[in-house]
Amino acid sequence: MTIKGNTKRVGIGTNSPLGKLHIKNGNSGVVSVPTWADDLVVENYWSGGISILTRDDSYGRIVFGAPGNSEGAGVYYRHSYKDMIIGTNTAGGYLTLRTGSGSQE
Figure 1 (cartoon, rainbow, N blue to C red):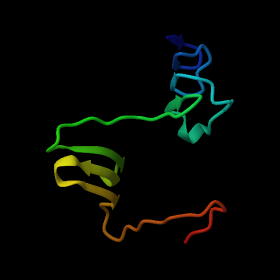
Figure 2 (figure 1 turned 30 degrees about the vertical axis):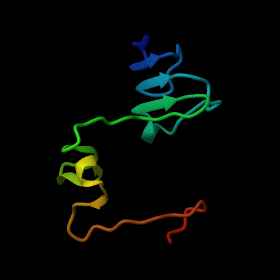
Figure 3 (figure 1 turned 120 degrees about the vertical axis):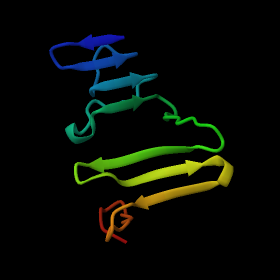
Figure 4 (figure 1 turned 45 degrees about the vertical axis):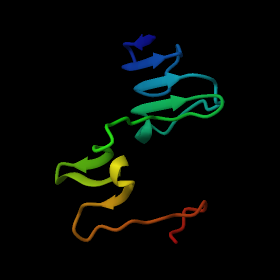
């Protein structure tokens, strides 16, 4: 584990963290990440991933919040209901899918 005090970054498996917390289990070949998405970097040579583990009757969640709404949108899964929810929790919110060109579909 490396703690870079001058950059305020922590690296696990790397001496040169690309983000605030960089967990590296293999070299992907990527040499930089966008500064607006560098809070957590998970890197691997083959496949990589993040696991959210809960009991069967509990939700695993990724939540997007702001001062005006602490749970504005999210991704939720509850195994016992076999229920995956992706969407907004904000009145008038919408879900947009984009193509590789960045255009909305």
